[in-house]
Image 1 (cartoon, rainbow over the protein chains, first blue to last red):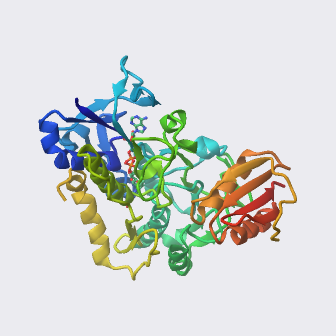
Image 2 (cartoon, helix red, strand yellow):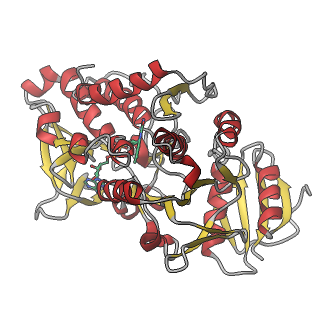
Length: 381
Length: 82
Ligand SMILES: Cc1cc2nc3c(=O)[nH]c(=O)nc-3n(C[C@H](O)[C@H](O)[C@H](O)COP(=O)(O)OP(=O)(O)OC[C@H]3O[C@@H](n4cnc5c(N)ncnc54)[C@H](O)[C@@H]3O)c2cc1C
């Protein structure tokens, strides 16, 4: 009998997993003992980090998009469909477009995160963002045509994808304006929901003086309650009101509705064992990447490492061996500190991040990583 | 304020055990957004700094911590939305 491995979500985690599994289980696939199916609700694989650069006119959205079929190993079956629910007794996935459900013996949820700006009144109409293709392009156009004023970067929702990205944007916009000799025409304010400028204490300690020495205003304990697009103001639950000419917001995020309907966790995030990545209370179900509640940031690098762990575990299980691989929380992150320099952090469940002095070489490493991403996702690097 | 026994009943509970700082505080803030004024929220957290962080946030945001109960392996922090 063929064993069905189903992966839901063809983003960074799902794609790396599918490709790594195809490599590891090549012999079993050839012998029809295993079939790997990747379900994704769109035709393309999307590499989201490109959007940060789209906002500054340095990249195009197309640079972050490729047909999934070009990125995924040909031994993997791809189905373009939205998975709605799971029948755990029959071990089947219910799909939006297909009449027949799809069988699974092992299931991995890699459905990522999506934006939910509607949670804050006025946010969708009143703000810009770089967390989507259209948003990043509209923001680029706005930045290019603005003639001075107040730019407010507000982190509205946490958890959100790439915890470093709001700081990166803030440092980059400061530098971008300086390069153009226009910084004195603008005020910049950065807001964050808790008492420091970043969720992680070590990053906050590193970033705080850097924001201030670049004359960037800082508003902590700022949880956006409402945005008024007419008067161009953003008000916090804590009673602070800021006037803006350009509001760049990191909108609230949710996970996939599918996770909620399948009862795998609240808010679309799957409850998992943070080491084995098994869904809590379910057999033969794993979750990786942004969808998994591991406690590490919603970052592509974490999704990648988790995919490697689950690939090893599944390969062992298929061969009737004990699954030994575990995830130790490893995450790496390049943080742009301007248009021309960056720092790098590496951390895990035990070791905190220690940002180093930014260098130009690190900036080029980040750009090189972005270029080589397509090989990484393909499993070649 | 740390007591060993809960002195107030909560209207709703946010279980943030297992999440590291500032996850529990952020979960609490999301819940505060969603509920009516006067509601008491119980936050369950095993992150060491949660009681201090929640206290600091409540003070700044004009909400009230009514109880912090040490439950052994986690704290139960009661916050009233004002
Ligand atoms: C602006 C920006 C910059 C970033 N920069 C970095 C960075 O520098 N470094 C870094 O490590 N990370 C970065 N990230 C974060 C990174 O992009 C994500 O963490 C990563 O994409 C997560 O991978 P994933 O596989 O969990 O989810 P995703 O890549 O989001 O993929 C999820 C896929 O599942 C599909 N899907 C969802 N639900 C269903 C369903 N029910 N049925 C079928 N398909 C479904 C989605 O359409 C999507 O294709 C950045 C993110 C943004 C937005």
